[in-house]
Image (tube, rainbow, N blue to C red):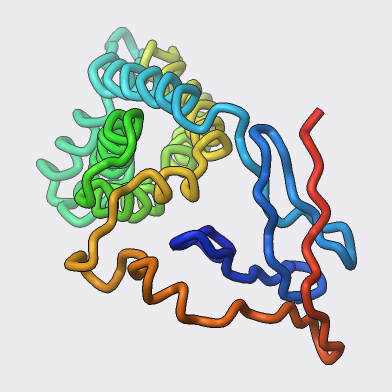
Length: 248
């Protein structure tokens, strides 16, 4: 669960990234943000549309990912010969030439991990549109977070640009549709990450007492625990809450 999220009707404290003050986040309105009551640093934001917007962006990214992996990435022309390849084709050629480890890394980070992240995220978003979502959605959300850390589309694009610069003097390089699709993915992935509210997704999952320990504790157990004090540094503070404001 994210630090500072709501569990069973209570709020856990969150530490400011700048001054380390522990404070309880208030309920944020859609499009609002919470700032530290000591230094003013932004602690949390709540997207205006936490479900439909990332769902639309995720579907668009999945379509663009299919285009990026099925159309030529680039074409090379030298001494009257022309060749083009796709991302999958490049990984296959590396495997064929004996570079198995590199081929597996390229295929996993450029194709499998991004596709897995989008698929898991879309399943979660479709499932939570009508809460409460079944508890297995929590597992899907965890897998989406794990796959996201391995999705390195921007690293692949940087490698492509470096290779293009090095071979520009030796051959004529023509960017294919796949290249533009990869560029679009570099814009869509940050847009998805900024629009997904994981706290809202977790709150829509129906947890039960028989669920694994990784899920939220039952409400009865939480109700018996005292509310945490808000403490920052060496100066004890109790009952402080960060300032909340609506996004412009």
